[in-house]
Image (cartoon, rainbow, N blue to C red):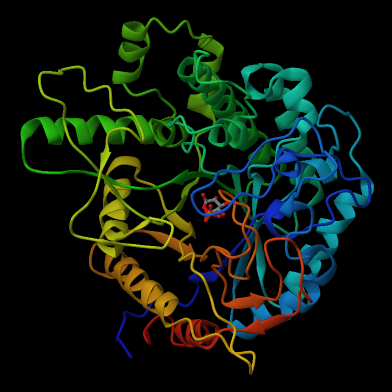
Length: 479
Ligand code: BG6
């Protein structure tokens, strides 16, 4: 056993999921079709396809998830047994507003989350809720073009106010848009669709479209923050960024400058969320690129008035980049400008494993944004083998968590980072967002289901279950 550092008694240990990746029940109790419902199964190295509506003969893994919709009370009991103090999930927008543009919500959808939150609270677990986690109503994509359209601001704020009011006595910690910054790369076609509901081809001016959509999302987020605080001043409403620090390959000045620009391009979203302002470099970039942006003075005032209370972030990996000879624009492009890091290992899906990067990132964010932080995703996707006796010996996962939790504790105890909690991703096996696989497992709890939705969906504990329980009982000291 490794000796860690004791975390404060009120530290929020828990686990994280997203509605569309585990609930299943995609067309039950009045739920509408979301983006995730039209994404087919992919696999390691093969992206998912997006179909024009739900088509016969295609496989849509989010339609069944891990059947949490029908089994959550069994799962909540297991979470309590592990010692969870909180549980991060999202509200499927399409359960509340099936098409997204209705004025009246769907009562059956609201009731589902009432029941879920009540059940969690009865187990001493507080819900932590993301409003939009890659599950925009598909109707809003088809009819309005997603967040390319300013009207989306009103639809989102209406959704936010509806659930803020309904759950104001059950939920304290909220986040607006999951991994809002995970749309800066062109990769066919999901990041833009999942984050902003944009369906574009590479030939479209996708980069300008991304900046515009992100601007509308940031305005929507700032309005939601203000509305939430008016409904319940105790609400803590955060942003959610995908934190993957980007290092220079060498000390060569061009590599260092390229890494700086790479960080600017990935984290300006956080600057706007946390500081309420666009960083200086960005208008210059828009000008140089000839991007004609719809950003009004009223929008800028809204951004300033709707800054977040904390920085929610995911951390899985770091990246590395290098400068290009003779290029002083430093127009970093993801993923083309990434290079291999010779110093770290990778997962089976090529994700670089770098616990020190977590400590580095936490320090970097503390110095830049001066807000409390909340690690709302971290984890290791791996192929697990279930033994004949039902056990899963996932020592590789324990080892990943041990190293990352230690780095997190060092950031808190040695470096003074203000951290609210830690919710490992996919605490129960669920459908992978990028590939749609069940085989890419993150959980402490094994779910007996395969990529095609075959299996009993029974739950069982992996070795990491007992290990994480021990971590929580010891306040993070026994790793
Ligand atoms: C984050 C997302 O990008 O990473 C989650 O917020 C996602 O929705 C998680 O599941 C892990 O990624 P993947 O592709 O392995 O499921």
